[in-house]
Amino acid sequence: MKKVFAILAATVLFAGMASAQLGINVGYAPQTFKTTYTNGNNSNTTTTSMTGFFAGVNYNTALTGDLNLSVGLQGRFNISSDTTAAGVGALAGASVENHNTQLLLDVPVLFNYGFNLSSAAKLSVFVGPTISYALSGKTKTVTTVTVLGNTTTNENETNWYGDNSNRKNLDVSATLGVVLSYNEFRLFGGYNMGLLNLTSADNTTLKASNVFFGVGMTL
Image (cartoon, rainbow, N blue to C red; front, side, top):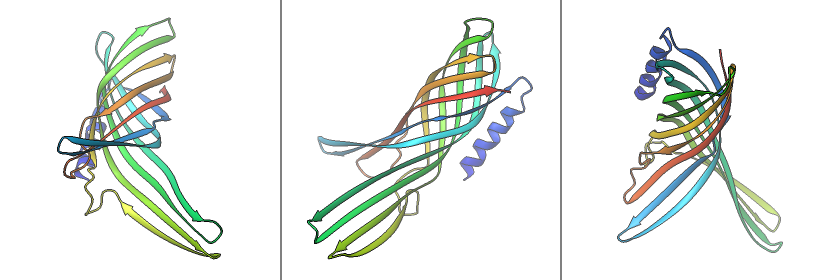
């Protein structure tokens, strides 16, 4: 949690800059996790996906000419579900449902450069790092077994970041994208490429990435 407080303090400090312009944003950011396991000269890679949404604020301040620096703070929520089922006619059946949720705090620190398209419209490109800290992550597993009409259900919850977990909370991404502004309104999109290995498991690499699309306005 010390990392979270440091991120918050840095953002609040930046917000106090007199020249900063406040913006609010909401959007869609589907998350992808790529896991690679290496055994000698052999490797196996699997990919899992989650649906993601975000909302937050940013402060954009001029550095020189049309070059600006934006620092933001946003919350991001990821969800996914999957079901595996098997059965033997009408005699017996079983299903396993996994419901995954993840909550993150992001701090994008982005250099952006704008080009005026008209007196009201502007196109900007941005690039920089995004610091992410996972506040929580869990998998709820529901197992249902039916035998001759009798059904038994069992639920179990796994904490991604518990004491016995190999997963890491902190990530840093390389972020790039574009913004189309019209007066105080804006549309934007981009890509986050995770740079850190999110697991401490032996011979395993876990990295996250996501595209994102959003709308916002300046105040």
